[in-house]
Image 1: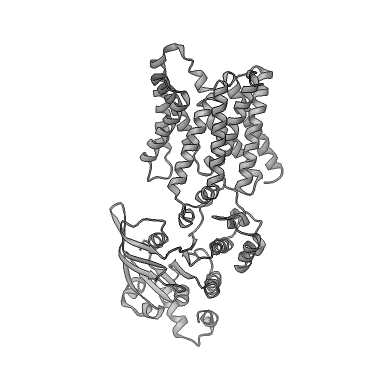
Image 2 (image 1 turned 45 degrees about the horizontal axis):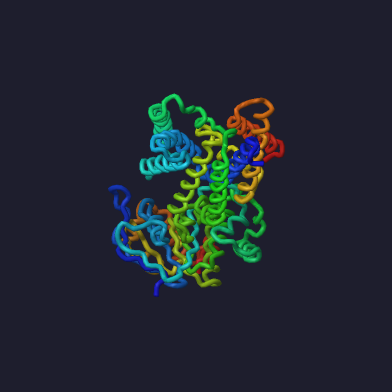
Length: 263
Length: 247
């Protein structure tokens, strides 16, 4: 069954969108959309590193994402958010990445497949990696759940409850870097943030607890992956963008439905 | 042994020294109120005593296994985070349905369990925050300006509730406030803060301390006058109700 490239693509899309759908609510709650974007843009730099040092793309992207996260955190430790710092880092990382990819690999490498994903060429190895990341993210969420929710709610409450907010934040950043690193293959560096944000935002109007929001976000993520790939087949459109289009349409429907119900 | 003991606390933010040379301890079962003008370092001190904030120098020692019921000044509630009152009581640890219902009933908001936090009034929110703090069966309740934004009656009710809870569960209470007259009457000990501890003692002692009068006697005539009025003029009918409460 896994010999069929369409089945592999479907499983890859599902794995990435589930991992992103589980993490997405935290990105929304912590207002890290732009932060996630910066990490994803750094992925291209990671691709260049991987090509240059001949290591796996996954490892290169993971460390590039962490590097950008560390850079951002040291630059803005004091301030709560910093639009301009993120703007500088995100786009610099992307630009340097594009230049570095061109220099290290020449025109042989199709940069577009990293920017927008290349889900139809997913290998069995890629699949194993994607679902391992999904499993690690799920296990981490279950393990740290109460601490994470307390931290999101109020860092002071978390500290007085004996949790270390720095450690939880680090955990979230590591998990994000993992998801970005596997998301490159599925939807690409430019669109992975969409899979983090859109399903979570679609879920928000219909739920009253954080648990329900994660569950519904997972549902919206899976729906986007399946419907997007199906749509890409029918309409002969690029798979990654089609998945995000499906997520966006689901968001629109969700918002409309919420409005009609008066939420 | 004291529940919390602090020695030689100092804290700077940037180049500005907010607190210096603060020594204090909190004993089992007592109500301690920290009062001081804006910017006097009250909240900073409370957060250091709670262990949320690290002092630049000095130490905070908690009794072994100390359980803190922390009531933040307010919850910077993120609109994207869905949270019902009932679910909030499960932070940081899940609690039984019976315990949750009992705590909500005890603070007088039993009907709110299914409501979302974002729709609550200021007074309801304070009680829900208090109910959550009670879930951990605290040795000490820490409250940061708990009655900010409540009207006089609301403040008086809230402080009476705190007093009752202290009597019922025997926890110590450490709170920060600038609402001098109501708070002071409910406290075993008042600490008057302005960058350092200006004076401390029973409400009576602090009220008569020259340091306290210097700090609050000018510019806040109203507050000081109100306090003295209630306590010095027993026969004044207009204040009889509040006076009864404070004894």
